[in-house]
Image (tube, rainbow, N blue to C red; front, top):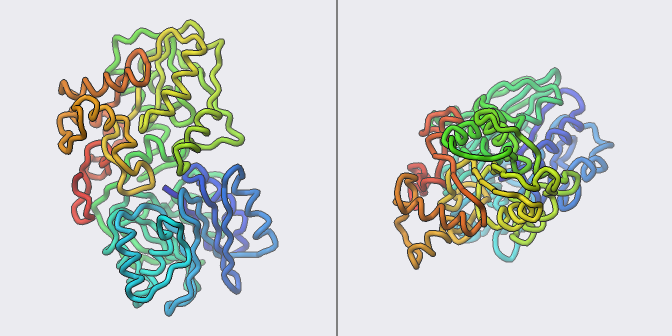
Length: 473
């Protein structure tokens, strides 16, 4: 998942653009990019490994006096993409994931379209989207065509001479929120980018909504859809604690998740509660509130040079980040029984090798792990998270229990069944921990506070949305 920020201003907005985009750094780890429009378009892209966004980009635009710009922190592709077309010049940034990207790119190449942004394995998603838009009669019709053709999700910003076009994913899986300050109108993926820049949130875009922002107005070009399928993981892990989605703050949701886990954990005997930094902290605080156990920091994150261990594209980089960033405090851990709150368990390798092992080595007496969401059972089809069943520790457990890979895993989805209990016990042993208890889907949804039909819970129960080609697995 990538983070987007765009701004249209009556005066110079270079600092708003730099800092607003920078506040999305937690959404990606590979590339940062800006596109600005003065008399002409200027585009800048930098690799983000071991560097922060601000330092990379200040030199690029400090001499410019700009009033229009878009920015992106990308988890995979280099962007923005700059296109010269019959619709005029424009720059585009996107977030999401397209399952049928190969089919779409091959169809475009069959019509004579050439791609310039690609690797050995794939064509740049943002360029594919740009080419689809450019092949239409207008930018608005091009965006609608994107929504019709893709299987997956896509939110986007397009900077053109007419203004800033903004479109939220047709099913609302990723967030786009409007904000306004004295001189400018902005749009972001994360509302934490608004707070210190003086923006007041106006509203979330509707799923599929298309708007055009100019210096004096926000014009709705397509109202979008009423039905939503917002990624529930935004509140559980992906989003920043100070960000709101649909008016619901992610830190508060995480506290409620921790409280729900504690209420189902009445017989636990432990000395204190700790969270795996950073996103596990709020879950742990909520657990401590409800259980009356003290909250202590058994693990601390070395923040300056290590970001999220979930976002790097390779397992090697994910493991390296996890190993280096978390530092245990032996004086707190030694001789104690710990309840450890984690946002989720995906592959299980980082928790096992770089968290649990460190705690045992520091003299932990018992380690009780409580993930704040249900077991992840399906690879994500809508954002760049897990790609295959084999990546998931749950699927490895099921394969070991069944002696083979099976298609129908319904009995493992229900936490009241013997099969579910066997799966959890297999994972507990594999992680080498004292006990393991996951959040229920019902409690997680209640903690978020939206109706279940408004949330995408595909990675937990395999239920997609009608009309996007991903109803079930």
